[in-house]
Image 1 (cartoon, helix red, strand yellow):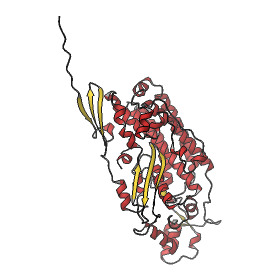
Image 2: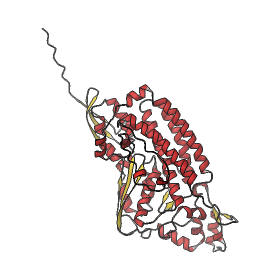
Image 3: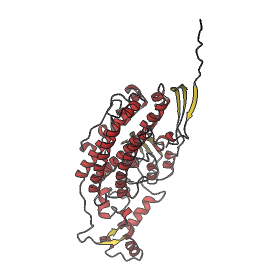
Length: 445
């Protein structure tokens, strides 16, 4: 009788990242494998730490705005507005109705851009290169809208304390509706390519799943929590701007796996498109010219006349601004920003043509002066592309924050990544990691 001896095996430990194309250059995962099965995983973050919170404490409230662009750098406007809302809550001021509509429109444009990137990149990492190219093509239409509104595509710095940088440009509504039509067509194409594709569904269904109880325990928010069946959305349960005046649904899943996360994001894109259409239809109108004659002067000429003291009648003119500054004219700027001189920067015409405007601008931007919220602390949250994006702020009454802490939605998701990949195949690590849509800027800060 021949007795076969059992083959002795031992686990293999390998390291994924941070120098790995699927790790986005910022994450290291040490995995222990039994053949192709992941038996244990240790996720290490911190490779992109930028000291965001410390930088906020070193500068004025205004100087922190560009830093917020670098949090979620795929949908930076949402971070912009979340920070601005926090400072406004400290100050106890209310922005104008038109400003709230502009913030909502730009937030949803950013959310669509983020979801298009997330779904497209996740599909590409599974080999669906065509879907990725289609999604990036669609994202380009919305990035053009962002560029038209603020002059930049990624590092936007669009928020102002008490308002926004500028009004929406002429023809923005028509351009946005054309972009929405293009995105809907792309979604239809990608849905046909992926949603019922057996290769895609086999790689996604039942993979990376997490229970509803575990998701809640870890502090999940956003698409990953909604994929588990929990319909929590900050825009619905803690409404801000004018979300409570518009109609939209909160898509949910039931299995909490990678496939449900894909479906939730696809459905959320459509809901964001609905919100943009409603907001464009309901946004209150505003005048374009400063007076009935509509007198216009080049900003450079206005500045030169002001320097020479030739200011008679100059305040009746509207500055003709370059494309990257359009929408900042006095008549439009005051529709989008609070009139509180202790908070809002004055329009350029006032700075160029009057000593009062120049002094107002000087006082707000100089170190040691600036805006000074009363002593206190607040928490302000918005619905980011990955979930609840919160800012906890403490003011000591000076012109710079005493403390700024970011509640980053990626952080609890990454904390639970090991639970999603343990027990699965090593080949499933990449799609599961992609479903989280980890953004290093908001995760490590």
